[in-house]
Length: 201
Image (cartoon, rainbow, N blue to C red; front, side, top):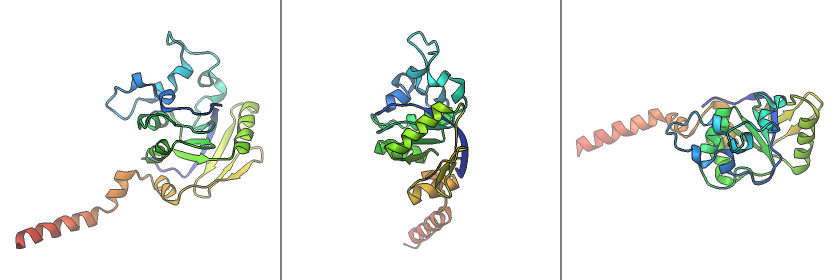
């Protein structure tokens, strides 16, 4: 998993409540056996019509949001089924940060385990971010995880909270497997001692 320390990224707005995991990655695209390659299908029905033609007024087809790595949305983002494919798709597309007033619990934890920083902000702050995103073409936010601060080029500065354990994992690029491997010496020591104990008996 790639470490996350700071990000200066273009912001994409999805101004909706209750964006569920089926909207993020529709079920017809869940047949892949790899974790990669889901980015091309992220928010597919927001991007393409029933004939698989690009929807002209979709934010995904707006040049102002090209190469966006920060996603802003509304309450209860990531609700619905617990599919881990949703953060896989978001990360594969290029999103590293999602800002919203609230997130579904399972999606919240899955995202941190896949290298995506989720930040909960008050509705009033989200309103300001949406306004700025629509006002300034190619609007960017600087996300400083180490100092827990969000800023832009127009004087905005927002502190944010993050669980210390999640922060540690992101700063060091550690998923659950990586955390386990940090204890590799102790695991090896335990296995050796167990083998010796078995031989003595």
